[in-house]
Image 1: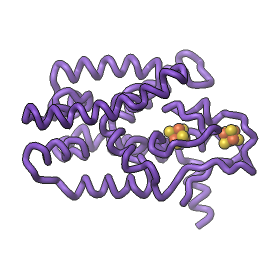
Image 2 (image 1 turned 90 degrees about the vertical axis):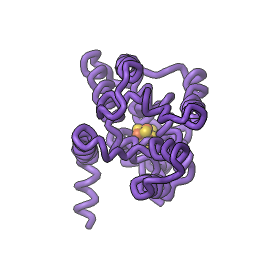
Image 3 (image 1 turned 30 degrees about the vertical axis):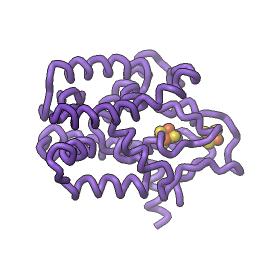
Image 4 (image 1 turned 45 degrees about the vertical axis):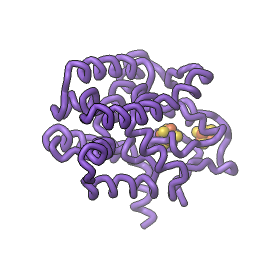
Length: 239
Ligand code: SF4
Ligand code: SF4
């Protein structure tokens, strides 16, 4: 058992890449089976019925593990992941670029506004309001529109300069899942007895969480980049 655990820990990022790639292919070729929990909410507002199975599974997993959907499943997250790592490679960056903390700490709330706005628009306009502008719609050909293509391009450019720009500040799905992961069962924690405060983890978190000051579980997308970079094995993901 310990051997399996060690193997998983040592190959965490490769396993994540593999799972993200598989889900990416799934979204590209089986887009009719969209897993989007926001789409399901819109459907509920419009038609008063739920595609319960996929929604409940995603929400239940979120309650237990936190926002693993964002870090391991979402195809947009996968693309934005590649984009910011490409930036790091081409610019030979050791640490991730950051948005000034004063601005960042306010902008993270924008996504909740986007969530409320699009649920309201769905109700008011009697249409799948977010699906029509969702950058993911462009990829999956579900509801790709000119607006969604332009938004995808905008967020790709911004994501090149600021890691996961869309996910941190604008994604309403991240906001919804964030509400369900305020106190998840499994939490990411720093073991103070092992931590030497080198701040390597802070500098590698793509959503700009300063782990050494505290880990807001609802902002963490469970990518475990921090865990992979910590040389002291000070980060634990546990109950
Ligand atoms: S990388 Fe590890 S040792 Fe360094 S500050 Fe983060 S948790 Fe502590
Ligand atoms: S705190 Fe760690 S696991 Fe959470 S988003 Fe940042 S790097 Fe990823």
